[in-house]
Image 1 (cartoon, rainbow, N blue to C red):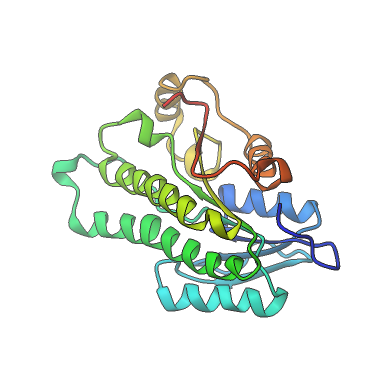
Image 2 (cartoon, rainbow, N blue to C red; image 1 turned 180 degrees about the vertical axis):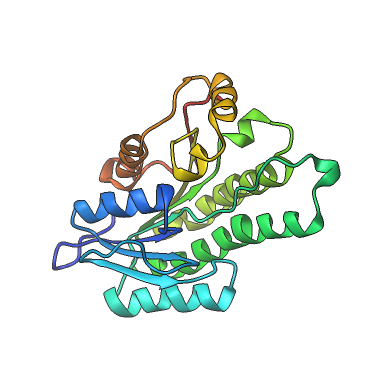
Amino acid sequence: MPKVKQNGKLVIAITGTSRGIGCGVAEHFLSKGWLVEGCSRGSAVLKKPNYHHTQLDVSDEDGVRSWIRSIKRRHGRIDVLFNNAGLAPAAVPTLTTSASLLHDVMKTNVIGSFLTAREAALVMAGRKSGRIINVSSMAVGLHEEGTAAYSASKSAIVEFTRIMAKELAPLGITCNVIAPSMIKTTAVEALGEAVISRALSKLTIKRTITMEEICHVLEFLVSPQGGIITGQTIHMGLVS
């Protein structure tokens, strides 16, 4: 577990806090008394004590480096990184997937996650303590038509996390992945009931998951008891 600073508050950096899972996780850790540093391409949605927001495109290397360094200046540490920001386009068959779409998906999901994890790890390494949690998707296990670009990006996240886990273990940093199945967010609800029902029918546990369930998994991974877990992907709702 990250070592508690003198005022008893731990610091979590979360990407993609403007909506969905990122916003929900930010609210959860704020309720637990953590200091939360969030970012998104847009302006802040959360207006709460102990929350600081930065407008950022996570694929911008200089921007990511500046954000992580600013967190270190404010708090002297980063205990946990929750790498949530991602782009999930509508299903497009491989034969009609443009290079532009593929580039955008890889830029946000792979390059963005990689850069943020790398920079956060540099800060964590100084204290030989930290947790990095990246986000994959149920799409990797479902092999759905029309998700070649998205699933490839989420598979890449799993693989680079495994390698980072090996590299960073001697520095006291764990690296894991959560792969949630379907959670009802505004973006998911916009897909329509027919699409949602079809996706749920392919899951092992055929229901949507809750924000509380996601946060429970994160609580375990950042707890003292989670310190032996690294390089793993925790699938939620799907046997993959």
